[in-house]
Image (cartoon, rainbow, N blue to C red; front, side, top):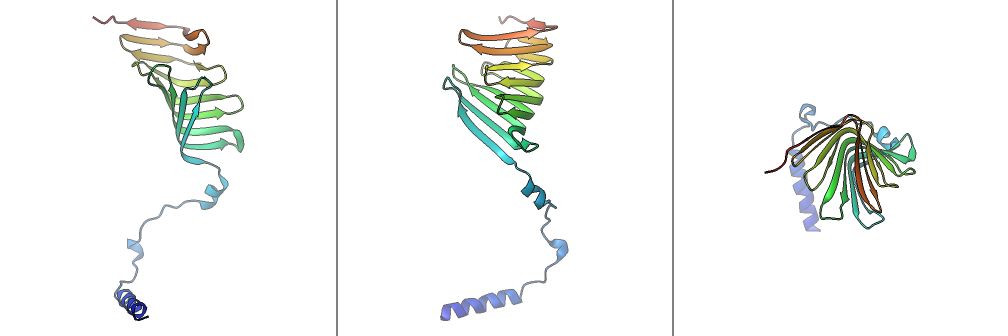
Length: 183
């Protein structure tokens, strides 16, 4: 009991010497619409891991994700990165500023500053790439730029696909390629 009384006395002395609050020195708070946050459904720092039918790993990262206009089958995401495990060691990495995922159609449209990098050093840049999980394809309906060891390529469109017999990569439209053989 004596301990409680002495603790109470100590706190009384501490609070009697404290300064009056100065509103100008207060910690600044961001003005946030709490009701808006409560209404919106969204996820911050999304991380998702899964497996493809053949057992390869797929990882999805996004800074923010939310259902598109309340439709839970269509998800809008920002600052997206996807890593797909390859048969050989390494990952195919896709990144973009924004993405639209269609869960019903099993597709993802990557938009703005889209980049695909391979562990072998090749890089594809485009404004838009559409990924289809159902037929395991990757398609750019617009111009693409490809760089890699000894290669620079530009094309109007591109499609990469995977079939039981193997993989394919097709460039269409005006295709320009510069190949520099290594010594």
